[in-house]
Length: 155
Image (cartoon, rainbow, N blue to C red; front, side, top):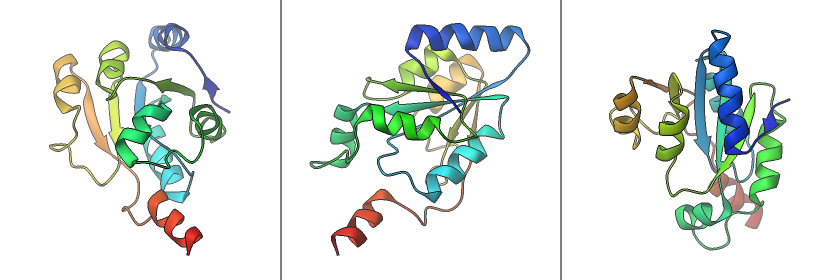
């Protein structure tokens, strides 16, 4: 089971992992209603490094990205669900509008995004490129979404 960490502790863990020769992968997202697409994305991300960090958007950024009525679950609940997945080592809730500043401070070896992106369309590609990291596109096709689940539930 993964651990939910604050930024300072996460940076300490990453430094210790690097000192031990481990590679770091980072994935991020809202993870509002956990579904199989999320699991496959995070399993794919975990295969890219020895340790997987998952950065979970805070509630305000989810509202900005997804609209009114979202998130369904609060940030701490979403982080706990993500941390329970076997593929995940560390989880951090981030407050910035984008994951760019977190990438710049952690400098993961690999920044993982889902198949709705290409390496050229990843918004953080310049940040990752500036420190010499790489981008990996992981997970299955976007056949699953929280929006679709909500539509089905609301019938």
